[in-house]
Picture (cartoon, rainbow, N blue to C red):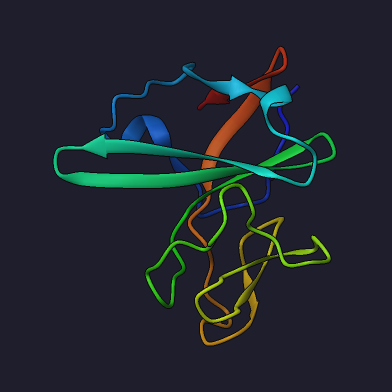
Length: 131
């Protein structure tokens, strides 16, 4: 059964990013991501580096490119920590913008109405898999 956010319409496929990943490739076991935490991944394509993160909330996963749509900087300042204190929103630590976890929509801050770039992944047999 797939987990994550099936209603995200701006999701991109990692397998289409020319970073050496193919559909079906394993990112990590879901057990490697603590509930309420995230795991970061970096991939190189030529001279470009692509940073993403996979957030786990209960049995759901959400994956996004680790770039604030306003500042162009990584969202987090601490490894694996992307949410504000309550854990209800992702927070850009550069300027405090808040993003809904379910769809990446900015609901507060200078990029209000913009979205994080979602990544299309799934969970199969306890593993986070590239779609």
